[in-house]
Image 1: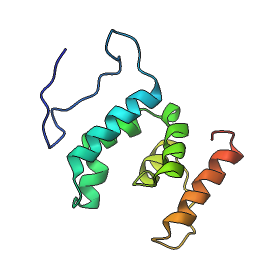
Image 2: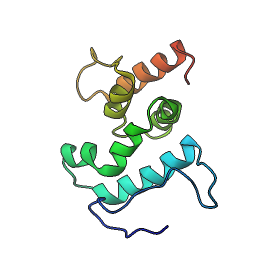
Image 3: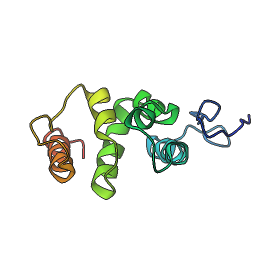
Length: 119
């Protein structure tokens, strides 16, 4: 199967199966979707464009299996993963952290993962 790339993300998609028909791991699929998402949002996107991009929504749609990958990604290179983690888990361990304090929010999520044996 093939698909047409576009900057709006509407025609970009990442099949669940990797090339050769084998199921992609959560990490492999996440990496492909992340690359699509970053290409699609560019450096000056609004928060709505960032969170509503189809690739970001597909990451959320991966559900619980992608949570460990998101936590690893947060630790390695923080980005807009808090919303995805909240959407998937229904929790927000960073709720009481001052807005804009990314380092503390990252630490709260990483602790959340350690407490649950996820990370």
